[in-house]
Length: 333
Length: 307
Image (cartoon, rainbow over all chains, first blue to last red):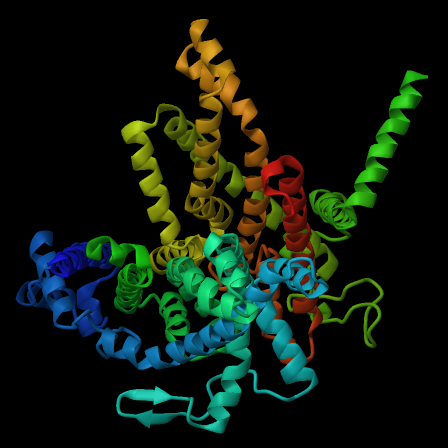
């Protein structure tokens, strides 16, 4: 009985959250449309510069480009629902195709960086929380102030200087050899691809690392002060078990919540990292589109980033619901 | 005599500060040096790096004095345009500091006013301001700034972007981060508004505007100063990042970020100094401001001690 009620509450929450997500996406599309119609010339995108003015008028009418803006907006949103966001003036291909072709590069860069952040910040954060007075903990926190203060592009430049220019150990530019797996062009399956990934991933992780170390440390310190930790210790549980099995599990919730909210920042830092390493991802593409005023490509990138943002935020909310024992217990008691 | 006594007392306080927080003292010294050198750039710099007529392409990419092949006229070498790098760095730091401080002034003006109103009046106004702050923060300020300047550049061209770069950067970075000030001001105002002196002032017939402006605002300044310090570091970093992406200061009027970018293209040809030296100055500036911010927070906010 009660579990059905809990289930219903969960479904209602999910429904409300999805409705919100759709509303935000609609707003993003309206903004993208406004940018397109005020900055771009749809006709030029299709026929180029060479067509004479009289013929242009004719074409404009035939293509429905002289329709009033509500009609055009409806058409734009209708097209977007079918995956049609316009044609790139640089590449002369559908913009969504162009952006999607660059997505694997950015995704693998972010994946590599996230793995590094996860593998380094959790142990470092726990260590700083359980041994706050140790020299190592002070060193880690001190270095994290330094890490916050170094802009991500300078980290990249210095890493390239050391590991590519001076030592010659690692490549400085591009993705290296890639392999096609279906639609996905991956650099994770070749040695050259992996070697090319090391420095960019390290650079991107360096800017998130200090924040996450502090987050893990803060969340752990909070949890360690609770009675259940003392009870577990009093019952004779090993310290490591208490830290990892009890405290870390509960510390994960704020981590997911705050970490998920960093998507926008992560996109911005990915853009900077891709610029430094000439990494052929979406951010690099976006800057090329900006330099050459490819309005359809720019707006498509914006819509894509908006979608990414909405998906992660919705996922974070759902995950928080699943991770927080208090929310699920409420219905069953 | 009393003057001498106060001088020794002041000297004592300074010595105590240095002994207690050597890191913060060092940061203060470093920041002071960089800031003074940057603000006095027109007096100190040997050449005016913005005066394109005085540049000579034959002087381009000369290394610093201590590297072979240098020219004694240029202590830190020259950049790709033949600018004296030291002068360019002094002027560039000046731009970075000016943009940073002005942007934070806008943030503070918006954020503190909204925070004071939300904290003092509460109710619906409070929930609207808090919600707006949440939304604004979730949008990532750097990404918003990148998008705004990218659209400006794509729509009106790189030419107009370089002409209006300073006001644009100030406004874009200024509008992006007001929520930090708003949140701090709101929380502090709520605490102060419940105190007896505010109630006393109200009983004496003081107006809401008078209470907020004359009584509450002066009492919530210390947490706001702490926020301002961190925010200045953030604004300087944002300006550098935007300029590095080619969305900020133009090559003709380089900030530190622009210098790093223009030098980066030449780094693999061996001209490392154009990137590395401005990069070190930028890091020095950011580290010193951040360390100062931490020290200020510890000193002004007893609740947030160093653990």
